[in-house]
Length: 157
Image (cartoon, rainbow, N blue to C red; front, side):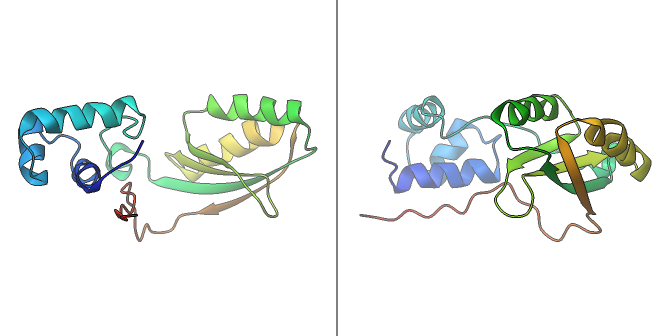
């Protein structure tokens, strides 16, 4: 799908406020409501807009501990990796999960209510998985920047 500058403007506005009415969005991007609605629907159908969400403040809902875990597997066999994938995807405290290059195989972003709760996740779950060789954890001391907005730039060809 080829995106033009209007599509990028729509995406930029929706990244800032996903609750904009179609009328307000159309005004901001310089379209009438019907063409704006059709463009948004096309962006949704093409999977460019994946979903709409409410972003919560973890501290205000009792989840102040954020940790990044670097995990190394025992062996790099496909069945072990698949087993690890399945078990990690089922854990609600794992917010993000990436396969990595470098010294570790995976990076997990984990949230918890306390250091103790995180320790239980690591010692009672993660380290008990037979496929896990080692885990190295870094705790977030203070968040300096957080955004979900992608840096959108329209480039004419």
